Image 1 (cartoon, rainbow, N blue to C red):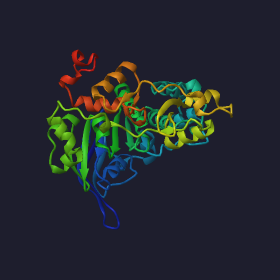
Image 2 (cartoon, rainbow, N blue to C red; image 1 turned 90 degrees about the vertical axis):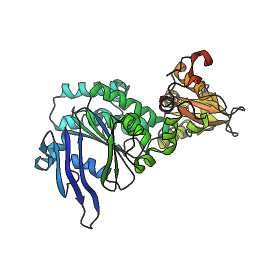
Image 3 (tube, rainbow, N blue to C red; image 1 turned 120 degrees about the vertical axis):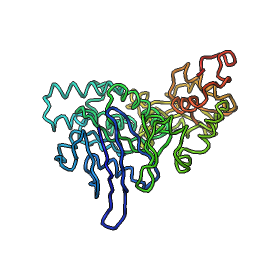
Image 4 (tube, one colour; image 1 turned 180 degrees about the horizontal axis):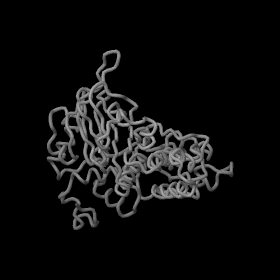
Length: 388
């Protein structure tokens, strides 16, 4: 589908960003390109839609050299998702998603139907969200729109440049899950640039690790984890992760997989809470007291229903933050709670109820995937169903 043939890029100041890169991206696969800053991963991706031109070599799409294609037409036929999202603030969500189909002169019935279809695919009701503006959405919701906007004109190729890196851990985990589900449904050819090896392992069909403008290893996640090409790949994957693969019976502690929670005090007003949610790009706040004891939770939808009442605070409308797990409990217990209750994240508290962090469904799945065969997950021992 996409082929790089001995591609190099040297800038006028003499800096060599790429050095003889040769690789292929297969039709319908998600290839994650990863490496340290300055390794050439974003330069490689931008050559596909001619945002960067090679100094040597060729980039081909379906055996056609992109250098010979009209750049405007090329870019209209390639979806592009960036970290800063780039939604047009003066346009509704429906108009943002329909932008490229309109440029390609689709008729109204066709693009309206496509917008509704895509919004439903990311669990956003078109009747509710289509007429809203970007600043009325959380960061995670905006990035969902960024993803489906790239799919709106049904391109065969989608480029994604660290699209989730600016989001909070919970939203990021959720969007990674949704991308995997979405790709299973649409099977686009996706080139995904990231600096996060955990993200690459989770979402990619194959991973391309780069260093100093060169490709070091391209392999499926399983193959790369079992057979890293050299010491650089081993260090990038992480020795601790590789050692855990050698010790599948050892589970990490709950405290080792916690993410930092987003909290607020019960006296915070609703307008203040909305500003905090937007700034930190979350749709739920965990409410704690002055000793950081977990009191409850409030979602953006709870606030939306009562926003006009200026006298209300988070304490007036918070709901119990259950379920939760105590930090000293086995990690297997957290797995079972998340699975049984169907929650996206689980607050971790001390014995006195102090909020210490949160663990997410996605991060636990990653951990448990490394622990298949661990007898501590047996239903006979734990009384649950979380077994490999």
